[in-house]
Length: 458
Image: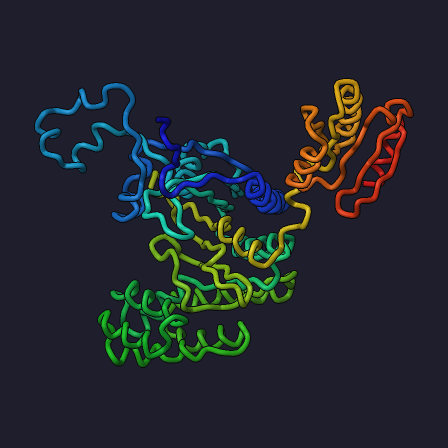
């Protein structure tokens, strides 16, 4: 009995329709990456294990897919290590490579290895799959694409402004209007922790603050208390719960709150420059909003923090995010190289576009014209016609065999083909072809030597 085929958990097959829709998103994102001056790079799907291990924390290390050494990988393992059943001791002896976990660490490795060939500031984009040995669930896969744009070698805030504009340009062309680009700064969070006397509890404080929209003000206060913040510290945080008004109004309130923190004041100054510049230049369709509860990437972001939310009414997690990091390449020995980057959440963007019906109506149309097959003589003429159409950029094909006409029409319907061409005995005699518009049922006859007339009518 033949084995029933299957694929690994957390992976997916993509249908032609899904691939076309994903490529639609890719193409628009890539176009704007290039318009903004980003250059493409690619890195290997697998890296040396020591490049990846230790860069994502203990949890991340556990989610890295290790690759077994080729050949008899157990032959170099001594009996004591083998019999100990200690995976931590055994793994380095049988696996020296691993599938990449993200695009950021390989990018840092790339910059260090190619630093003498790169023109700084270096603007790079990268769209490639990554792998994580995560527990598969809805919206979370073990193999998925990341879509990143980064600038390294510049600490200018003009880069942050450009990245906001880049988000706006991409989502505007995708017709995903009204996305909310949320903005915060790690220095502001550090400054708040400083003025309330909780520098040592920065992570605990921000993790609780980040839950404001989920559990409300009282819930956040309760969690802060459980995480060790004093009643006095929590009281000093209260103004954050009632920030209102325009972005600049909120920044003015933060400026007052953080006036005694040099770090916090610097963060407010940076955000004020970004926000005021964006307001002066304007955005096409996105909204920009200050969100002091935004606390993603605190282990590596040192300045601006970005997160993009879908338009109101769409229940979806973030569809993009990023931030500034002051020492990305330091893990590989190249110190003090500042950078800032963003990513697009391809899978979530796909789901949002699908839910809102924003994919172009004709996007699934992989074939514009199908010539039916009435026999060998007719098929030869149809092939010549199809060749002429393809040279003019028309997606055209000939049904490969002389099947029942009903079956051929059904095939055309299933492929969502808008035009079917018929060349039978009568058309051969008259050097013509008949075009049937599948939606309206209308038919029109053209001369075989007037293909351009048909193409003009498409």
